[in-house]
Image 1 (cartoon, rainbow, N blue to C red):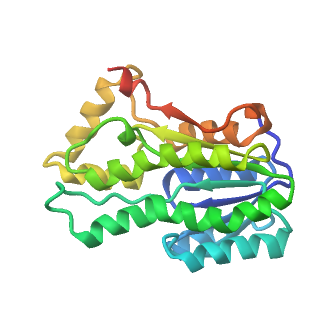
Image 2 (image 1 turned 45 degrees about the vertical axis):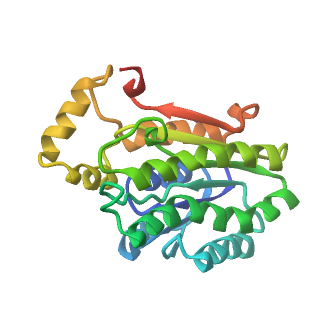
Image 3 (image 1 turned 90 degrees about the horizontal axis):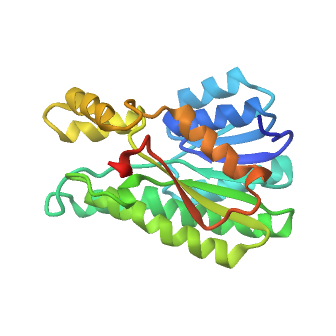
Length: 250
């Protein structure tokens, strides 16, 4: 268990998959969570399930104004920001010559630009207050190429350099770390394997090749994220954590 009692956290990509699990786990351990996502109905469900601690602002995180609104709402409602989890992600499937410029830019806009937009507004508030910790959801795609995923792999690779730079520029008050999952059973993974002719077989084969013989769960990733947000990791910053069931060891 971690103590996030009355801590204020922003979580993007919170209406599905890993982001949703992270938001729920933070709430269960005492945090006030301002969640963001594109699915308004899912957002309402989160708030209805936890009306005292879960708050929701709908929108597409790749738009600068959505990020400004998130930070503004957190400050107006709670007076500070302690933690940020950037979990929103987008694929962009196809070989390099098949991906349209729009798909390429959309992938980078969600996976990289949105990080810039949100942190640009939030970091001055965190620096002026008590500081805190930031966790970005990366991917093993930063280290391992996957067929038909050039935009996704490149965008996730960029986050490694960004996290290191942020740790250098904003320490000691704010810590930054990257969690790099392998195949976690989420809607994003299911969309990813649609690039193959046999997606169900691909998922089964992937699990069987892992040393731990199973796909990851959103809870597996949330456990790592909460550790990095917490004071138990107070001497960890500028690092990436691979949570992959042993994928990169094979």
